[in-house]
Amino acid sequence: MAQQYTAADGEILNATAARLGEQIAAREVSSVEVTRAFLDRIAAVDDTIGAYLHVGADAAIAAAERADAAVAAGEAASPLTGVPIALKDVFTTVDAPTTCGSKILEGWVPPYDAAVTEKLRAAGLPILGKTNMDEFAMGSSTENSAYQVTRNPWDTDRIPGGSGGGSAAALASLSAPLAIGTDTGGSIRQPAAVTATVGVKPTYGTVSRYGLVACASSLDQGGPCGRTVLDTALLHEVIAGHDPRDSTSIDAPVGDLVAAAKTGAAGDLSGVRIGVVKELSGEGYQPGVLASFEAAVKELTDRGATVVEVTCPHFTYALGAYYLILPSEVSSNLARFDAMRYGLRVGDDGSHSADEVMALTREAGFGPEVKRRIMIGTYALSAGYYDAYYGQAQKVRTLIARDFAAAFETVDVLVSPVTPTTAFKLGEKVDDPLAMYLFDLCTLPVNLAGVAAMSVPSGLSDGLPVGLQIMAPALADDRLYRVGAAYEAARGPIAP
Ligand code: GLN
Image (cartoon, rainbow, N blue to C red):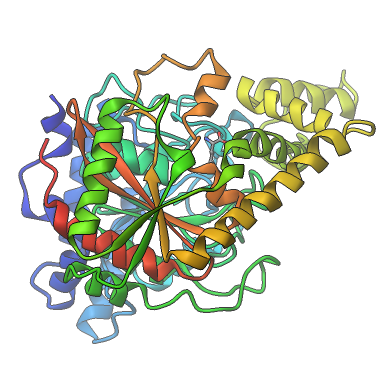
């Protein structure tokens, strides 16, 4: 059954984005043909998978025609010109609705493009559509979307991860060769891990948040998703860069990512120091996940890397700190959905005051998880509790950043599993928020510290994908690609 969704006939669907870009540049195939092939694939499988909330076929074909014209004129803007892409529905797009998986934004078409959207358009990547997500990026399974369930292409009874399950499922079901996600606490890496795709959470501040609808602004970061490490590097170079419209944007280079992926693919890791994070494995982890992780560490050692165990004692508190800081920021950011400015408005019939319209709209427009976090955040920030909750969590955040800094004094990258288990069944954790939160155990420290990390497939456990997490210091994203590509080459293909 999985094979039906994770494999398909057709050279175009199976090709890497790097290869498609080369073929389009050489005019061996047109962007229109490639884009059509993916639109046909979406039409064939997405009723079952549910990766897309909106498919923009006409706009995608028009963009593909422009890409073909640019190539013909010798004016291709990037190595990915003409290669289509799926965009998480949290980035604004002037020509398509942007709902963030929420009823409160149903039908809202933004008046401007996000910086990431602009960059994709400028580089000539046709946007196939907007992908499903947990409401406002809060969740670990995409089941918190107000619109639809997304199924894991490896086993359609299981979750595709979250909150960016739509982007990961689009890649794994061969319904897109590239995708964009956002990672506030793991929403790129965790879906990548459970769908055997690659996802990178860039250094905080290196991909503009302009037009990325905010979940938790000090944690949110857009990033690239692909089926190979090189494809992900190519996309990362398209979307990274300083943007004065984002006040937290960093004006500094992140290194030569594509070159690092190519160096890594040659396979030699001698001289690279890798730290295994002691706190991110062991009890509570599925044996198959641990076995896969151990095998990955052995591959890295065989490639010449020096591997040592590293301790990051405060990582144990990451979950508690994250689930105070994130809701606090959410409670403030989501105040803008006030029934006056965007999307839904309930009770506007002349019989209700403005306050009542606001309350009725927020009651009807937000789902249970969003409401839960707004309430937790409001509580954590309230007078009398601020120091005990929010203030304390910020201190823990600093200690976690210091753990990373100390570790990176002795190693170049850190590694761990991405998730404690493989994909769970749809419905299994929806009524148990804490169990859902625990699925993010390994990914949260990275966001709290603002460093960079990748999830790269590390094989299957009982037929389900497992991911290897690689973590690098801020602005050393190139190390992820070097080590990730070396590991990918050593590991070989993952067969369903
Ligand atoms: N699953 C985490 C949460 O629910 C992370 C979400 C994300 O990265 N957007 O907050």
